[in-house]
Length: 367
Image (tube, rainbow, N blue to C red; front, side):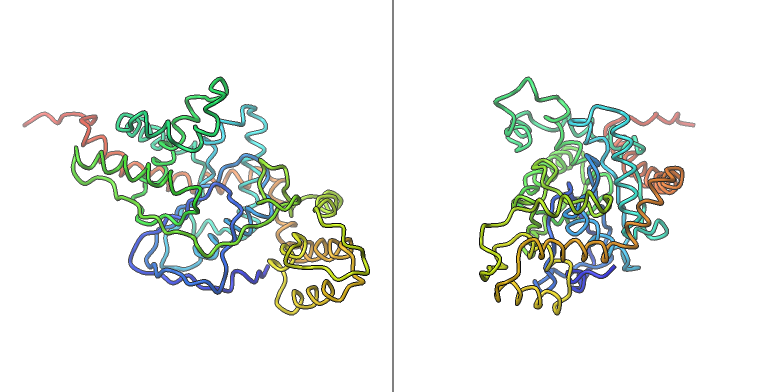
């Protein structure tokens, strides 16, 4: 699969990198300036709150997989299934979402020989570390977190898990001692919370955690959903490129457009159909569709059919692999198990350091 936005190269410097995502529908622009980063440790956390959609894949998965292919990088990609417990309560549904998320990663080209791929819930160290960090986190810090404040008027709907969500995220980050976290504006606060907690711990117990630095993702483009807003499960406006063709067509044909008559010229820059098409197509195809919009005599229905055909073609191999993985959950499980053993070993090293600082390691008898 070839996507235009993946032609841009991310240069590296001697720093570690975390690419932490909550399935935000962001897309890197290839011609935007990039910061130099090298010998990077990449850690990408993805919440399994449903089947991955087009925004997830273009905005998070494909850029991360591309970055991980550099042999100079050490990459850790995890499925944040513990985070999903704040919203997903049904166990069967959770397993289905985890399998779909894992299948999407693998179908898009994640190579477990190059990436440590694991479920967050299978690395208990993150929960232990989260408890330790909770004990250094002041109440006002969490009370001011966006995730909590958005629901503060309906406190009966707010669980303790949602309230302490940023602390678990901090544990996800600090457990692997990474230096840089590329984030959008919506995640900057969570990163600052992680830094503040780490700094508090370090002041009391000495250098233990690396304070992660934010790498602002200014070179991003919002991926539109079927209603023109940012593509998001919470808006119910997603497009699933792995769906059956009939279901995929239904979603694409539901994309909102204006009422410009078929024979009239149309503004491609104000159309979600064109924007999605341009994110997948090469320059020649994009220019051709733009010319059709501007010339008139070309309807939105035709543009939607073109988008459908393009998605089916661009994701042809990925759709086949996704179906194969979904039909063979044992294969998914085996690949996750391999990564989870590696992740636990890495996490235990940091956790042992923290335990020692806090006095939770056995006292050795003097001989």
